[in-house]
Amino acid sequence: ERAKMPTALVTSLDRAAAAALLDAAGLRRFFGALVTAEDDMETRAQRLLSAAIKLGRPPERCVAFVGCPSYVTAAHNCTMRAVALMSPHTAPQLAGADLAIAAMDELSVYNVRRLFANAGSEFMDLRKQRVNERDARRPRPSASALEGPPS
Image (cartoon, rainbow, N blue to C red; front, side, top):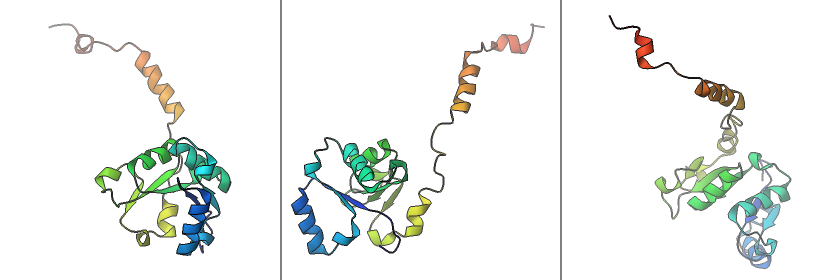
């Protein structure tokens, strides 16, 4: 709330049940958007993208807080960062996450913002790729040509 980060809850519950649970836990005010069963999204990635759209944020500027390896994959497929909560899964099972934590109180706004410190560097540099492709098309000299004629 103090960090002024927009947040959404993604759940397979219907909207009424999700709202009731958030109200009972006193958490409703922390979520600006809900993606629920009524949104009729078929895949995890679609649910996450729907949350980004409802928040008005590009997916590459979003963090998904997840609890299972399949949601880590879905977040990355959407170009989102993934912070995994290690329960019931272990750190090795969640190795693909950008950050794995045992409890939410281990997390700070600073750590979340650090997830974006190298934004863009993980994507392929097409210029480098084209140079490498050009090099790969050139015939390479054989080992005997490099050694010179036999003495």
